[in-house]
Amino acid sequence: MSKTKKGLFEGVVSFNKQIGERFYRLGLRFKGEAGKAFAGLVPGQFAEFDISTAGLPACGEIPDDLRDSARRELLLRRPFSFCNVEIDGDEVEVEILYCVVGAGTIRMTTLAAGDIISVVGPLGNGFSVPESKSTALLVVGGMGAPPILHLAKVLKEKHPEIETVGFVGAKSAVDFPLEEIQGQSKDALKSMSDFELNGVTWQVASDEGDIGHKGFVTEKLEEWLGSCDAQKDTIIIYSCGPAGMLRNTAAIAERHGVDCQVSMEQMMACGIGLCQSCAIECKGDGGTEYKLCCKDGPVFDSRDVVFKV
Ligand SMILES: Cc1cc2nc3c(=O)[nH]c(=O)nc-3n(C[C@H](O)[C@H](O)[C@H](O)COP(=O)(O)OP(=O)(O)OC[C@H]3O[C@@H](n4cnc5c(N)ncnc54)[C@H](O)[C@@H]3O)c2cc1C
Ligand code: FES
Image (cartoon, rainbow, N blue to C red; front, side):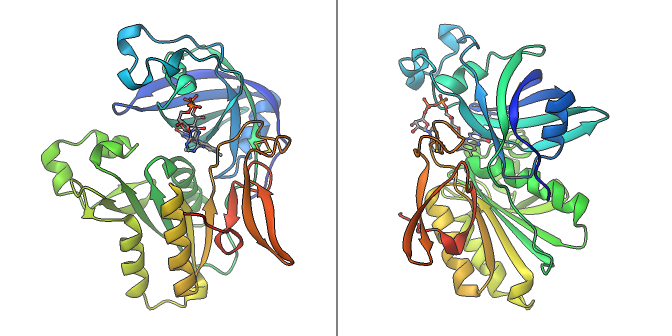
Protein backbone atom coordinates (compact mmCIF):
# COMPACT_ATOMS: atom_id res chain seq x y z
CA MET A 1 0.00 0.00 0.00
CA SER A 2 1.58 3.31 -1.08
CA LYS A 3 1.89 6.36 1.18
CA THR A 4 1.27 9.97 0.16
CA LYS A 5 2.84 13.23 1.33
CA LYS A 6 1.53 14.75 4.55
CA GLY A 7 0.41 18.36 4.88
CA LEU A 8 -1.61 20.93 6.82
CA PHE A 9 -5.09 20.88 5.31
CA GLU A 10 -8.66 21.99 5.93
CA GLY A 11 -11.47 19.44 5.89
CA VAL A 12 -15.19 20.22 5.66
CA VAL A 13 -17.45 18.23 7.98
CA SER A 14 -20.03 16.27 5.96
CA PHE A 15 -21.78 14.52 8.87
CA ASN A 16 -21.40 13.80 12.58
CA LYS A 17 -23.66 10.96 13.61
CA GLN A 18 -24.12 9.49 17.10
CA ILE A 19 -24.13 5.67 17.02
CA GLY A 20 -24.10 4.76 20.71
CA GLU A 21 -24.06 6.50 24.07
CA ARG A 22 -20.45 7.67 23.65
CA PHE A 23 -19.65 6.82 20.00
CA TYR A 24 -19.88 9.00 16.89
CA ARG A 25 -18.96 8.75 13.21
CA LEU A 26 -17.60 11.96 11.70
CA GLY A 27 -17.28 12.48 7.92
CA LEU A 28 -14.78 14.98 6.50
CA ARG A 29 -14.39 16.03 2.86
CA PHE A 30 -11.09 17.09 1.29
CA LYS A 31 -10.46 18.62 -2.15
CA GLY A 32 -7.39 19.46 -4.25
CA GLU A 33 -4.01 18.72 -2.64
CA ALA A 34 -5.73 17.57 0.55
CA GLY A 35 -7.89 15.19 -1.48
CA LYS A 36 -4.79 13.76 -3.18
CA ALA A 37 -3.04 13.29 0.18
CA PHE A 38 -5.97 11.51 1.83
CA ALA A 39 -6.82 9.42 -1.26
CA GLY A 40 -3.57 7.55 -0.59
CA LEU A 41 -4.26 7.00 3.12
CA VAL A 42 -3.00 3.60 4.28
CA PRO A 43 -5.12 1.84 6.97
CA GLY A 44 -3.48 2.49 10.34
CA GLN A 45 -2.18 5.94 9.40
CA PHE A 46 -3.65 8.81 11.39
CA ALA A 47 -4.03 12.61 11.41
CA GLU A 48 -3.83 15.35 14.06
CA PHE A 49 -7.06 17.37 14.40
CA ASP A 50 -7.41 20.91 15.77
CA ILE A 51 -10.72 20.85 17.61
CA SER A 52 -10.06 23.93 19.74
CA THR A 53 -12.52 26.03 17.73
CA ALA A 54 -15.46 23.63 18.25
CA GLY A 55 -17.90 24.69 20.96
CA LEU A 56 -18.93 22.78 24.07
CA PRO A 57 -22.39 21.15 24.05
CA ALA A 58 -25.07 22.54 26.37
CA CYS A 59 -24.36 21.80 30.04
CA GLY A 60 -27.09 19.12 30.30
CA GLU A 61 -25.55 17.21 27.38
CA ILE A 62 -22.11 16.83 28.97
CA PRO A 63 -21.73 13.45 30.72
CA ASP A 64 -21.33 13.87 34.51
CA ASP A 65 -17.82 12.39 34.55
CA LEU A 66 -16.63 15.00 32.01
CA ARG A 67 -18.24 18.12 33.60
CA ASP A 68 -14.90 19.44 34.97
CA SER A 69 -12.45 18.21 32.32
CA ALA A 70 -14.69 19.35 29.42
CA ARG A 71 -13.89 23.00 30.16
CA ARG A 72 -10.12 22.54 29.81
CA GLU A 73 -8.45 24.64 27.12
CA LEU A 74 -7.28 22.59 24.14
CA LEU A 75 -3.64 23.43 23.49
CA LEU A 76 -2.77 20.36 21.45
CA ARG A 77 -4.22 18.71 18.39
CA ARG A 78 -5.79 15.27 18.92
CA PRO A 79 -4.77 12.15 16.92
CA PHE A 80 -7.37 9.97 15.19
CA SER A 81 -7.11 7.14 12.70
CA PHE A 82 -9.75 6.45 10.05
CA CYS A 83 -12.39 3.77 9.56
CA ASN A 84 -13.20 4.54 5.93
CA VAL A 85 -12.03 6.47 2.87
CA GLU A 86 -14.27 7.10 -0.17
CA ILE A 87 -12.85 8.65 -3.35
CA ASP A 88 -15.34 10.59 -5.49
CA GLY A 89 -13.56 12.27 -8.47
CA ASP A 90 -11.20 14.89 -7.04
CA GLU A 91 -12.96 14.81 -3.66
CA VAL A 92 -12.19 12.42 -0.83
CA GLU A 93 -14.41 11.69 2.16
CA VAL A 94 -12.72 10.18 5.20
CA GLU A 95 -14.59 8.83 8.21
CA ILE A 96 -13.52 8.92 11.85
CA LEU A 97 -15.12 6.70 14.47
CA TYR A 98 -14.61 8.36 17.84
CA CYS A 99 -15.41 7.85 21.49
CA VAL A 100 -16.18 10.77 23.82
CA VAL A 101 -13.56 10.60 26.59
CA GLY A 102 -12.47 14.18 27.37
CA ALA A 103 -12.25 17.88 26.54
CA GLY A 104 -11.50 17.42 22.83
CA THR A 105 -13.88 14.62 21.94
CA ILE A 106 -16.82 16.22 23.80
CA ARG A 107 -16.28 19.31 21.62
CA MET A 108 -16.18 17.14 18.51
CA THR A 109 -19.81 16.16 19.17
CA THR A 110 -20.92 19.74 18.33
CA LEU A 111 -19.33 19.74 14.86
CA ALA A 112 -21.97 19.99 12.14
CA ALA A 113 -22.07 19.66 8.33
CA GLY A 114 -20.22 22.60 6.75
CA ASP A 115 -17.86 23.24 9.70
CA ILE A 116 -14.17 23.42 8.82
CA ILE A 117 -11.41 21.63 10.75
CA SER A 118 -7.65 22.02 10.45
CA VAL A 119 -5.95 18.64 9.99
CA VAL A 120 -2.29 17.60 9.80
CA GLY A 121 -1.86 14.31 7.98
CA PRO A 122 -1.79 11.60 6.86
CA LEU A 123 0.83 10.70 9.49
CA GLY A 124 2.80 7.62 10.52
CA ASN A 125 3.13 4.18 8.99
CA GLY A 126 0.08 1.99 8.49
CA PHE A 127 -0.46 -1.74 7.98
CA SER A 128 1.33 -3.53 5.12
CA VAL A 129 0.35 -6.69 3.23
CA PRO A 130 3.28 -9.05 2.54
CA GLU A 131 2.99 -10.92 -0.78
CA SER A 132 3.24 -14.42 0.68
CA LYS A 133 0.03 -14.26 2.76
CA SER A 134 -3.23 -16.02 1.95
CA THR A 135 -5.06 -15.49 5.28
CA ALA A 136 -5.47 -12.27 7.32
CA LEU A 137 -6.77 -12.44 10.89
CA LEU A 138 -8.08 -9.09 12.15
CA VAL A 139 -8.12 -8.72 15.94
CA VAL A 140 -9.92 -5.72 17.46
CA GLY A 141 -10.42 -4.58 21.04
CA GLY A 142 -12.96 -1.78 21.74
CA MET A 143 -11.80 1.56 20.30
CA GLY A 144 -9.13 -0.22 18.24
CA ALA A 145 -11.87 -0.81 15.65
CA PRO A 146 -11.42 2.15 13.24
CA PRO A 147 -8.12 1.33 11.45
CA ILE A 148 -8.94 -2.39 11.33
CA LEU A 149 -12.36 -1.70 9.73
CA HIS A 150 -10.55 0.38 7.11
CA LEU A 151 -8.03 -2.44 6.60
CA ALA A 152 -10.86 -5.02 6.23
CA LYS A 153 -12.36 -2.95 3.43
CA VAL A 154 -9.02 -2.45 1.64
CA LEU A 155 -8.21 -6.18 1.89
CA LYS A 156 -11.56 -7.08 0.32
CA GLU A 157 -11.16 -4.49 -2.48
CA LYS A 158 -7.45 -4.81 -3.29
CA HIS A 159 -6.56 -8.32 -2.10
CA PRO A 160 -9.69 -10.45 -2.71
CA GLU A 161 -7.42 -13.53 -2.90
CA ILE A 162 -6.71 -13.20 0.85
CA GLU A 163 -9.18 -14.96 3.15
CA THR A 164 -10.02 -12.50 5.94
CA VAL A 165 -11.42 -13.50 9.32
CA GLY A 166 -12.31 -10.97 12.03
CA PHE A 167 -12.33 -11.16 15.84
CA VAL A 168 -13.81 -8.27 17.79
CA GLY A 169 -14.08 -7.89 21.54
CA ALA A 170 -15.00 -5.31 24.21
CA LYS A 171 -15.94 -5.22 27.88
CA SER A 172 -19.69 -5.48 27.21
CA ALA A 173 -22.22 -4.95 24.41
CA VAL A 174 -22.41 -1.16 25.01
CA ASP A 175 -18.63 -0.83 24.55
CA PHE A 176 -18.54 -1.93 20.89
CA PRO A 177 -18.14 1.24 18.77
CA LEU A 178 -20.10 -0.41 15.95
CA GLU A 179 -23.49 0.63 14.60
CA GLU A 180 -24.15 -3.03 13.66
CA ILE A 181 -24.06 -3.94 17.38
CA GLN A 182 -25.37 -0.71 18.94
CA GLY A 183 -28.50 -0.94 16.76
CA GLN A 184 -29.54 -4.39 18.11
CA SER A 185 -32.10 -5.21 20.79
CA LYS A 186 -30.92 -6.86 24.03
CA ASP A 187 -32.39 -10.21 22.92
CA ALA A 188 -30.61 -10.06 19.54
CA LEU A 189 -27.31 -9.19 21.27
CA LYS A 190 -27.54 -12.24 23.54
CA SER A 191 -27.62 -14.62 20.58
CA MET A 192 -25.10 -12.75 18.42
CA SER A 193 -21.94 -14.82 18.02
CA ASP A 194 -20.81 -13.26 14.73
CA PHE A 195 -21.87 -10.66 12.15
CA GLU A 196 -20.86 -9.38 8.68
CA LEU A 197 -19.13 -6.05 8.20
CA ASN A 198 -16.97 -4.78 5.31
CA GLY A 199 -17.23 -8.20 3.66
CA VAL A 200 -15.72 -9.96 6.70
CA THR A 201 -17.37 -12.29 9.23
CA TRP A 202 -16.48 -11.10 12.73
CA GLN A 203 -16.54 -13.44 15.73
CA VAL A 204 -17.63 -11.54 18.84
CA ALA A 205 -16.40 -11.77 22.44
CA SER A 206 -17.16 -9.70 25.54
CA ASP A 207 -15.67 -9.79 29.05
CA GLU A 208 -19.19 -9.70 30.56
CA GLY A 209 -20.64 -12.26 28.13
CA ASP A 210 -23.73 -10.18 27.28
CA ILE A 211 -22.78 -10.61 23.63
CA GLY A 212 -20.80 -13.39 21.91
CA HIS A 213 -18.17 -15.53 23.62
CA LYS A 214 -17.73 -14.70 27.34
CA GLY A 215 -14.03 -13.96 27.69
CA PHE A 216 -11.17 -12.32 25.81
CA VAL A 217 -11.29 -11.97 22.04
CA THR A 218 -7.76 -13.43 21.96
CA GLU A 219 -9.24 -16.76 23.19
CA LYS A 220 -11.23 -16.94 19.93
CA LEU A 221 -8.07 -16.13 17.97
CA GLU A 222 -6.10 -18.90 19.69
CA GLU A 223 -8.96 -21.38 19.15
CA TRP A 224 -9.03 -20.50 15.42
CA LEU A 225 -5.26 -20.88 15.02
CA GLY A 226 -5.30 -24.15 16.97
CA SER A 227 -7.82 -25.70 14.58
CA CYS A 228 -6.34 -24.33 11.34
CA ASP A 229 -4.39 -26.64 9.00
CA ALA A 230 -2.87 -23.91 6.80
CA GLN A 231 0.90 -23.30 6.73
CA LYS A 232 1.45 -20.76 9.50
CA ASP A 233 3.78 -18.62 7.36
CA THR A 234 0.86 -17.93 4.99
CA ILE A 235 -1.15 -16.26 7.80
CA ILE A 236 -0.81 -12.71 9.13
CA ILE A 237 -2.49 -11.13 12.17
CA TYR A 238 -3.39 -7.41 12.25
CA SER A 239 -4.42 -5.95 15.59
CA CYS A 240 -5.44 -2.70 17.30
CA GLY A 241 -6.86 -2.24 20.79
CA PRO A 242 -5.88 -1.96 24.45
CA ALA A 243 -2.26 -2.69 25.45
CA GLY A 244 -3.13 -5.94 27.27
CA MET A 245 -4.93 -7.32 24.23
CA LEU A 246 -2.02 -6.41 21.93
CA ARG A 247 0.40 -8.14 24.29
CA ASN A 248 -1.75 -11.32 24.30
CA THR A 249 -2.17 -11.20 20.52
CA ALA A 250 1.61 -10.84 20.05
CA ALA A 251 2.25 -13.80 22.39
CA ILE A 252 -0.26 -16.00 20.51
CA ALA A 253 1.32 -15.01 17.18
CA GLU A 254 4.75 -15.99 18.51
CA ARG A 255 3.49 -19.34 19.90
CA HIS A 256 1.97 -20.25 16.53
CA GLY A 257 4.81 -18.84 14.40
CA VAL A 258 2.52 -16.34 12.68
CA ASP A 259 3.51 -12.81 11.56
CA CYS A 260 1.68 -10.04 13.41
CA GLN A 261 1.39 -6.27 13.00
CA VAL A 262 0.07 -4.18 15.91
CA SER A 263 -1.06 -0.55 16.01
CA MET A 264 0.36 1.09 19.15
CA GLU A 265 -1.95 4.06 19.75
CA GLN A 266 0.10 5.77 22.48
CA MET A 267 -0.78 9.18 23.93
CA MET A 268 0.68 11.75 21.53
CA ALA A 269 1.49 15.46 21.77
CA CYS A 270 3.05 16.72 18.50
CA GLY A 271 2.31 13.70 16.26
CA ILE A 272 5.29 14.48 13.99
CA GLY A 273 8.36 13.16 15.80
CA LEU A 274 9.45 16.28 17.72
CA CYS A 275 8.37 15.92 21.37
CA GLN A 276 9.28 12.25 22.13
CA SER A 277 6.07 11.82 24.17
CA CYS A 278 5.05 8.70 22.24
CA ALA A 279 8.29 6.68 22.60
CA ILE A 280 7.93 2.92 23.15
CA GLU A 281 10.53 0.32 24.02
CA CYS A 282 11.56 -1.90 21.12
CA LYS A 283 14.09 -4.67 20.55
CA GLY A 284 17.03 -3.34 18.54
CA ASP A 285 20.03 -5.24 17.13
CA GLY A 286 22.25 -4.00 19.96
CA GLY A 287 19.63 -4.29 22.76
CA THR A 288 16.79 -1.99 23.77
CA GLU A 289 15.96 0.96 21.57
CA TYR A 290 13.13 3.48 21.70
CA LYS A 291 10.91 4.16 18.71
CA LEU A 292 8.33 6.89 18.16
CA CYS A 293 4.76 5.72 17.65
CA CYS A 294 3.88 8.81 15.60
CA LYS A 295 6.82 8.52 13.17
CA ASP A 296 8.09 4.93 13.21
CA GLY A 297 4.58 3.55 13.88
CA PRO A 298 1.84 3.50 15.00
CA VAL A 299 1.97 0.10 13.25
CA PHE A 300 4.88 -2.15 14.28
CA ASP A 301 5.87 -5.78 13.75
CA SER A 302 4.82 -7.32 17.09
CA ARG A 303 8.23 -9.07 17.38
CA ASP A 304 9.93 -5.65 17.60
CA VAL A 305 7.87 -4.33 20.53
CA VAL A 306 8.63 -4.81 24.25
CA PHE A 307 5.11 -5.11 25.75
CA LYS A 308 4.89 -3.65 29.27
CA VAL A 309 1.61 -4.95 30.71
C1 LIG B 1 -2.60 7.03 16.39
C2 LIG B 1 -3.85 7.22 17.20
C3 LIG B 1 -5.08 6.93 16.63
C4 LIG B 1 -6.26 7.09 17.38
N1 LIG B 1 -7.45 6.82 16.76
C5 LIG B 1 -8.59 6.99 17.46
C6 LIG B 1 -9.86 6.71 16.85
O1 LIG B 1 -9.92 6.32 15.68
N2 LIG B 1 -10.97 6.93 17.59
C7 LIG B 1 -10.91 7.37 18.90
O2 LIG B 1 -11.96 7.54 19.53
N3 LIG B 1 -9.73 7.62 19.50
C8 LIG B 1 -8.58 7.45 18.80
N4 LIG B 1 -7.39 7.73 19.41
C9 LIG B 1 -7.39 8.22 20.80
C10 LIG B 1 -7.72 9.72 20.77
O3 LIG B 1 -6.61 10.42 20.26
C11 LIG B 1 -8.00 10.20 22.20
O4 LIG B 1 -9.15 9.55 22.69
C12 LIG B 1 -8.25 11.70 22.18
O5 LIG B 1 -7.05 12.39 21.91
C13 LIG B 1 -8.79 12.14 23.53
O6 LIG B 1 -8.90 13.53 23.50
P1 LIG B 1 -9.78 14.27 24.60
O7 LIG B 1 -9.33 15.69 24.63
O8 LIG B 1 -11.22 14.02 24.39
O9 LIG B 1 -9.40 13.52 25.92
P2 LIG B 1 -8.25 13.91 26.94
O10 LIG B 1 -8.85 14.89 27.90
O11 LIG B 1 -6.99 14.27 26.22
O12 LIG B 1 -8.06 12.50 27.61
C14 LIG B 1 -9.17 11.84 28.21
C15 LIG B 1 -8.74 10.47 28.67
O13 LIG B 1 -8.39 9.66 27.55
C16 LIG B 1 -7.07 9.15 27.74
N5 LIG B 1 -6.39 9.10 26.43
C17 LIG B 1 -6.10 10.13 25.61
N6 LIG B 1 -5.44 9.70 24.50
C18 LIG B 1 -5.30 8.35 24.66
C19 LIG B 1 -4.70 7.32 23.88
N7 LIG B 1 -4.06 7.55 22.72
N8 LIG B 1 -4.76 6.06 24.35
C20 LIG B 1 -5.36 5.77 25.54
N9 LIG B 1 -5.94 6.70 26.31
C21 LIG B 1 -5.92 7.98 25.88
C22 LIG B 1 -6.40 10.11 28.69
O14 LIG B 1 -5.40 9.47 29.47
C23 LIG B 1 -7.54 10.51 29.60
O15 LIG B 1 -7.75 9.58 30.62
C24 LIG B 1 -6.20 7.55 18.71
C25 LIG B 1 -4.96 7.83 19.29
C26 LIG B 1 -3.80 7.66 18.56
C27 LIG B 1 -2.48 7.97 19.18
S1 FES C 1 3.96 12.61 19.47
FE1 FES C 1 5.67 13.94 19.53
S2 FES C 1 7.30 12.61 19.02
FE2 FES C 1 5.54 11.37 18.76
